[in-house]
Length: 222
Image 1 (cartoon, rainbow, N blue to C red):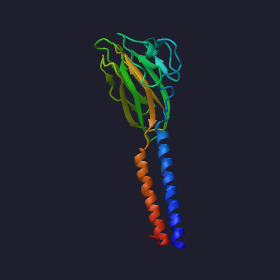
Image 2: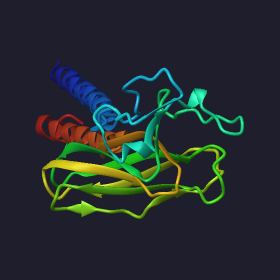
Image 3: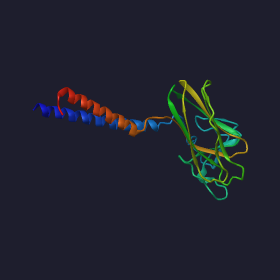
Image 4: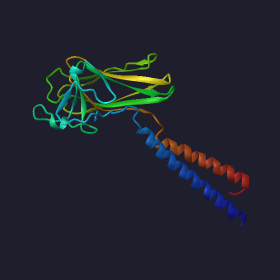
């Protein structure tokens, strides 16, 4: 009877460890999807026209707005070609302008910044898509190499930059396009890097094994 009871306890312990593993995986996937930027896909304000010049996307600050505009690519084309937005229906066009937004980061935490980059469909030779990034809190300033998509690619390029915040507080992301380049961006995501579900699962399984081994050693059940 004693061995039977101990076996039941061991089974309950394994069941609890399994449920914990499921929760950890779900939490990891949820946390990874959280974008610290607001309106990273430039869906606000909603447009009913092909493009809206001199309009700042919600939560973003635009420098030189005369050369920056929201696009509704499904109704905008050059040479009869359209390039749909990668997330939602709108994207952001820049030439000799920049966009900025701030987000609160935590010191010693690893983050990833990702976005989709393209040049204007049907752009003339030499009109590349260029995105110059700056991430700064006034003390730490990160300036990765410029991201470039060659003219005439007629496709999106998914770009990513990983970094670790040295300080806690607001960081400002600035994305600039030099004069003479036709830069279109969409789906800008800034998120904390989290362990992959596989890594969490391995840690949870090792923990479950150690707990079960300690339990058996304590009770003398093998």
